[in-house]
Length: 155
Image (cartoon, rainbow, N blue to C red):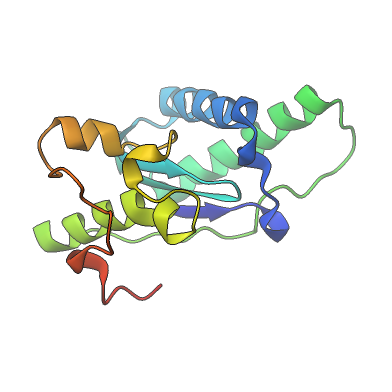
């Protein structure tokens, strides 16, 4: 799933808001159980690969996460009144098979390089890339060039 901040404002450049997003993901899991397979938090959007583990679906998860994050964000900054924080919709994709899984996993982990934020995936601090590298999924120097698995990806 991909969710973008309204007007692509780079809110998540500030670590305290990445931390707030992580906290809200954990809080959302208590009400709408899911497991996180992969993630990448970028300045103005994020990608998460999740699997619902309870009765909730992707929409219920996002419709809980987004307003709760916004409420906490406003509280942190002392903002009152209405505020549009997120773009209205989110993009989701159901993984179809192992190849599709790998392509999306690679896309998520290569995203900071794609956006010119770092030269190598391991240099981005807000990603599950190190977890997958430690599991042996990625060889040394993976993502230092555009990976073959996502060369034809519809960016």
